[in-house]
Length: 124
Image (tube, rainbow, N blue to C red):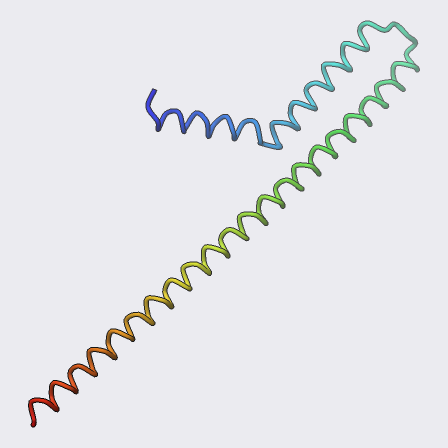
């Protein structure tokens, strides 16, 4: 494979493995499958089954809430990191621009001084 294709596949892999939505979907799917299997293989009364379904639903809700909160925390951290990186780059660019301006001012001052010297030399 070429490097572009490898980079694209790596990017897709990173997106799939770090996406909080994928994690949440996996948690919910796993919970539903587990709850369904539990209900099918554990004979009990209707009242017990309803109570168990309610508890399982509450557990799934809690797991989903935790997964969403974790995803939000990770997203906030990533946004803060990106913001800090952008601010750092902006400061670097600003400093580079100021350095270039100072360098050009020094060159211009030197050229003006040389011009003045040449004019005075020519007048004498």
